[in-house]
Image (cartoon, rainbow, N blue to C red):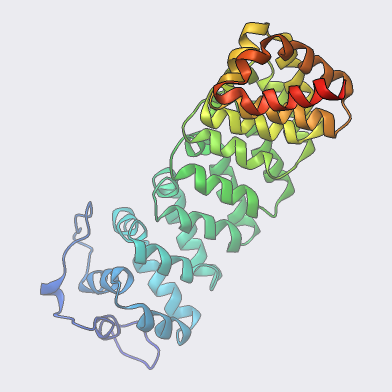
Length: 328
């Protein structure tokens, strides 16, 4: 290959290695079995992308590269799915691929195809998931559409994964497409119950409730009606119910369920290490929002258990009830 001033050549790759020993020093990335088409350039490129000591060189090289060079890099990086996975699942590889996104439409097309081929594996990986997040932000309209279609198809799988849920939350937050954003919010709302009971999915429900989308919040409340008390006994479930109490459009749904449950269940919830926070918030917010009928209903239902609430986790609730008695 002829070497021009800004040509993406083998010598350029080897020069990127501060302690380069040539191809004999290359160790194949985990999970990648070099194919017959793999070249020494693939090895040098992997070292450039994944070497933690090559940050400054990489930045300098990219700043001096034109779109033709970037397309050649993208072509090499995406030439084999296992090879691409090995790079983007590397901490430094992920960061450097993110730096390459959005700089050239032709290069982005190659990266988009590579991401979509291994979409779920990439988007549920600790480091590779940030490549997907970045791609959704910087790709053009058509490539974004292809990405969003995959996100919608795999949304529940992402939501129920420890890294995928973080990626999904970021994608929803950063979405600049109203149609796909609403589709994702509707999907979360319609699956709110199963997600709320999932170790990772509950974080997605919590997150969308912090976006203060009134339609989504209402839909989540409706789909969780009849299960709010049960969720309130659980750590993360109680967080979701507390967030529902903070929004006027969903607060009534939660409080009505609290009032509908039997006195013993409400008493146990009020004394529970997680549930007591839900009951305290219900009392404080119904009063603050002038929902007097709901506030009074909770007070009347809790008052027979005042002596029990003064002990353990119900002490804050007892204090509220005592102050109410004094005013009466």
